[in-house]
Image (cartoon, rainbow, N blue to C red; front, side, top):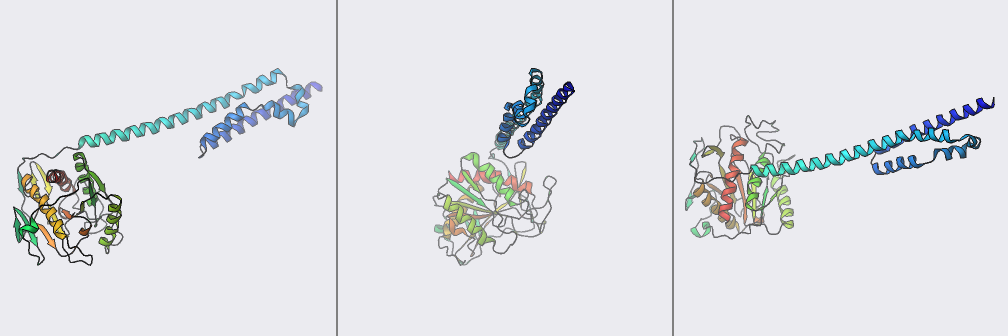
Length: 373
């Protein structure tokens, strides 16, 4: 009878040890995948170092007498699963660290590859303006730069002379009509959320702005490109919304004279696609829209914006004749009072594809850099 009692107590000890170890493993693994991963790991390590024999001795004093060397060896054997689990946890943690490092490395490599793809636009290329169904009307010309004056301002040579000095440290790009988009192409298919409009920035004028940023950066400019929606969910109040954005950005970036509001021509069908062929590439034509002093916000220095547009377009006519259509001058201020180098640039029209507009940005970036030297 005594021998049988001893055997039963041994079995109880082994059962309790097994149960304790299993519970410890489950708790450890569960806590590992919680937000306090390192804390869970320490708890498992503490369980490993805990003397289970002593705990059982305190709870069941009668068992203490039979905790001989054989029992201790058995208990030590049950430490193996814990050691194994700790090894797995350590391996998982190491793999996670390696994965993060690998992702960071891949991201850096992607950026480097993207930078490698930026090829400066060549000059000396043959250019040819393709026929369109909308004539390019103009009323004034200065040194080859054509202006369609829709105001009663008398444009003298003094007003048009591009004798303007600009701080070129920063160039701010934004979009008052953020959702303006183009005719879908084989490469750039998208779902319209309006008449030639989309909230997907990968297919709107925002994507065009990204392209201009990409080509301007290698020339050494600090580009601030804001991609905020200003015409969504409501189109009304777009200029009020964009003025708030631009004002905040200019407060943070004091040395900014060049502020470009990239748009797409508002003609609402796909029959109008003003295009210029430069070398072997087809690029959407561009157009400056300059505002006057006719808005509720006073803009008595609007001539500075016009001088800036003339300065850029003079260089464009020299490098890539036909890249720009005639400058339009209107009464509306278009928030151009914010900087002396502020302007709207309309990139293509509804009939142009995004492909053509992206090509335009390569040549525009070259023109801007050459004009600002």
